[in-house]
Image (tube, rainbow, N blue to C red):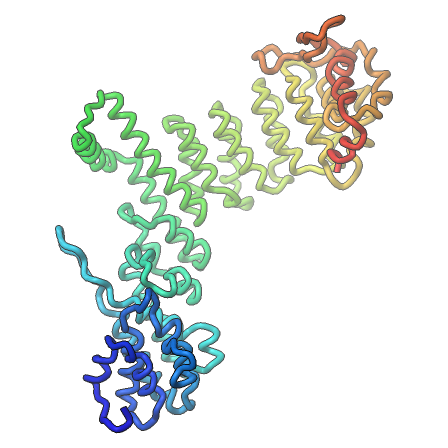
Length: 522
């Protein structure tokens, strides 16, 4: 090679020969060649077709042992790093604009019935990314800040030009998400405009915006997701999907009746909507919060949809916005299904205690014991030992108070921090309302052991009335005990505090060893 003149024709020919990579590397290394030719050699190494599934410019240019030139054993970045600073600056000064030009070329468009042309931009995207890595920075590959900005801008433009097709392309050495993360918030500014009803990679877009986006970008993405959700629940969605579903049934030679067809259409609509709610959960934002709270309050929507809407605003409610607090409490106090109420109380539990405790206590007045239990456990999760007296004083006096409530509250009271719960509960064993006494004594049901049986022995003869509840079978006061003189078991009604201790609490304590009780109290 040293005895012959090398030109562009040689460069292009070497791209496809076995020894081409080492020859191209040699041209790039030696200053006897014109800068233009050395740049073209670098471009040839970049666009060279993969060999054994690898692009040599980003793995190892010359794989021979030992290589003809030591620098050629590494990657293109290694070769550039080995050049004298002046040579490298001259070559990179032309190489970067050439890469940018390739990245700005429009993506191939597939015609109906035809296979789309191969997208030749991926190796140039990989090269651009490789030249911007921390390793490349340490090696001083690009010293000019303007060139760096040009590469960043071109990479972002490249990604936005055909995001969905380029995201999952397996030919790239560096994944698109890796590239966008390296660029940061500027890389995802354009994603909200791509988040439309026709987007196929909505979840990936939402993830990137959530991870990298600045507040303005997240807010735009939030609004875009709301528009998609509104479209899915509109008549326009039904008009578009109805004939599509009929065609699919026809292709499968199936003939569903009208109700089956309607059910399938509804299910597909719900599936689409739940996917959007999942993306909303990642992005959040005021548009999502307002939409989700309004949607969750709609009784015309399915339980699953309403639940998903509330899940989408996890940790997104603003305690500084009274309207947020008001709307979530209205849902929690409504006649919504249990799975919706559960999510509503989860969201309430994410707000400051001082802002919602009194409102949760107001729900204790309801005759719906399951709603009260959800409100009570929510406030207990926010509380410490110093709140025990306050909590027990808010419980209803006697009627419509379920056994399941007392047992649940006893367990939660035992988990309170910043003090010793049992020390504060003891004074409530003999005074207060039946519901408060039962809830306090129920601490032993979860945490008491056989060693604690003597501590409650005096309570077994207490004839004070126990709470009562007749609203549904699940709330009745009864415990299963062994029949006298038999191994069979039976339900015994609880009429007094003493019955509660003797038939429910003490048997649970006897079955628990002291060591187990210590573990559970930790």
